[in-house]
Length: 455
Image 1 (cartoon, rainbow, N blue to C red):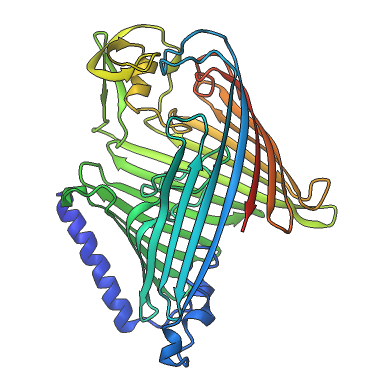
Image 2 (cartoon, rainbow, N blue to C red):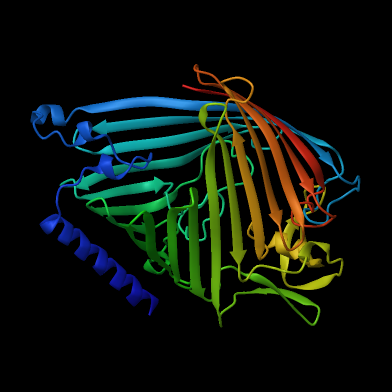
């Protein structure tokens, strides 16, 4: 049944491509999109009067960024060993590392684009001090300026909210609350975009990231349209071994407030949960009910002291029908594991665990997803531009798990001058009782300083 649904999806996409080529009008891509995801500028793409030898010319741009990080973390309690990770978790810790990204952007006159993002990370305290990761590498091309493709490893713009995107089932790296150092990891596949004027768009993505057979292929299809001042989209996602997910998202302005929303619905949950029966811990996936996940965002810019858009406030809410309402992290009981778990003891030797707490079972089996673990969350993001001086920005943010009443509060200042020098200082406070989502790692606060440059 799932294979048939995937085939129907592919046939529909092919039909839309053929229809666009046969009957669609030539589209000005720049007028439709102003995001970084657009392919190239109009004057680079659509000037049909250029000689053919000029059309083959390639422009190559090389750029990059480098960021050095130093942080200090204060611990809550000075116990000897953390049950959660079997490592010494008592001492205050420091961390220092540097991350660099090199970007290669090559473009041809008629719309073909090649992009590479290579990330290098050096951590002097890690076992593997130097790591190199290919974050993105893709090729853009189009058919008659009507159908646009991107093939390769890529980060997609899928979802409307800042933090929670339940409609985004494609990207590997989710949006983070704490500052991300470096680039997001891309997903491998083929992206399709068919614009119909300025009001309608069809997007598709064939996910081949983990394909060892055709059963492992994933696909998503989205129809986006503009009605009045509201932009909205309906989409569906499917993959072998997973329940299909149907989504809806919108963005509009209500009473001067930018309002965005996302809803994902599946008959059965694609995430596993802990199951306790007769003192034995196992995991399961909900199969018998519809599982909604939703996020709602409200944002507004404010003018202050004759400076437009100087202050920005954004409130965001998240709901996960199948999230935990009980506090898994604080349960001290010892259970038998349904399957033994291979791990390391404090000395680094491999051991096999057959029993432990729910917290250990959750973490050892990768069943925990930060900021999406419980049923209800709220986040408040704020930014004050030109703070004291023109190049300084003040940010104060908060995220709260409404089920266990734990929070992270951050405050930071960031300086960036015209020479692309970036200096930042932040402090993260982990608030709440012991053994909650944001306090179980045993941290009181983290102070972090960064120095970066763009070139």
